Image (cartoon, rainbow, N blue to C red):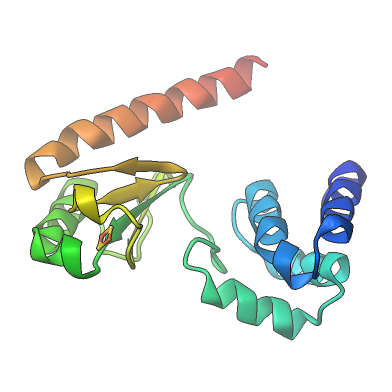
Length: 167
Ligand code: FES
């Protein structure tokens, strides 16, 4: 269950929106941030906050690629597979991620840190092939740059973890 303060804040955001659906993505993202993914409980809570049916929330959740209806790693790596990225080597980039992470696309590493997913255009075609991790965009990223990027992501993850531990 989400904290009361978050529930109230989300209700206020929904009340300020022109339509409840307009605020839906915002609400889903916040619930996902809280739970790590959009759990069944989160779908019910979103439905209550948005005054929609759970089925309507489910439809919205499955429409957005950045909303996850199953558990994901702490960092989700989205590799764009739309035309500009595909034509500039996106496929080899994805294979390099699979190789270095030791997982197949769609999977999560055993330590729960990374999930690897394909995605449609990130709106960063000028920097193809492009990748998004959380809110950060990277590109053009070549297969030979993947190891360094993973090191950087691991390091920033450990740093965040440490900060959360010492807080
Ligand atoms: S096609 Fe990959 S960012 Fe647009």
